[in-house]
Amino acid sequence: MPALRQRGLTLIELMIGLGICAVLMSLAVPSFASYLQRQRLKAAAQGLELDLREARYESARRGAALNLVFMPGPDWCYAIASTPECDCHLQQPCRIKTVRAQDLRGVHLSDTHATRFDPASGNVDQPGTIAVWQAPGGEKVRVSVSPLGRPFACMTEGNLPPLPTC
Image 1 (cartoon, rainbow, N blue to C red):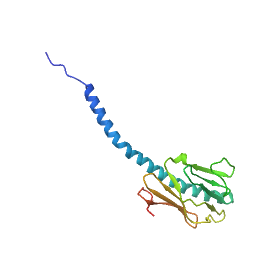
Image 2: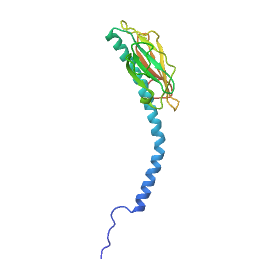
Image 3: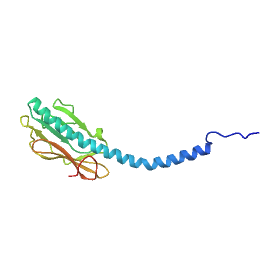
Image 4: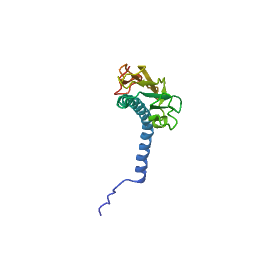
């Protein structure tokens, strides 16, 4: 009588495979969390860079000066606003666009400098560093504006392609 051939896996073989997968996943989770933080840092810097370009464009389109105002701290926010006194935490008509800390969890905003875009020339009143973003891993990105109003972002600490080092 021919022997019956076993097909499939036994419960023990499945449990061993599941255990190996669990160990490999536990090794990958910290690396993935670090990756997410670095991507949030990059998104914050590139988002501010785009918002600065939008403020410059909107200022020229409206024919009125626009301001980029910051509220630093653990519950930070920034806004493109029609007045420099506009509070990005409050619902006010002066706000055009707002970005809050809840949008980019774990990314810290520091060394902020409010700026104003001239509608006629597109220039800023105070060129230089606008903000510095920092991730929990120690990476830092600086967002600056040239005297002509062109924003750019660069890494001051760490490496996060495609951002260049300062």
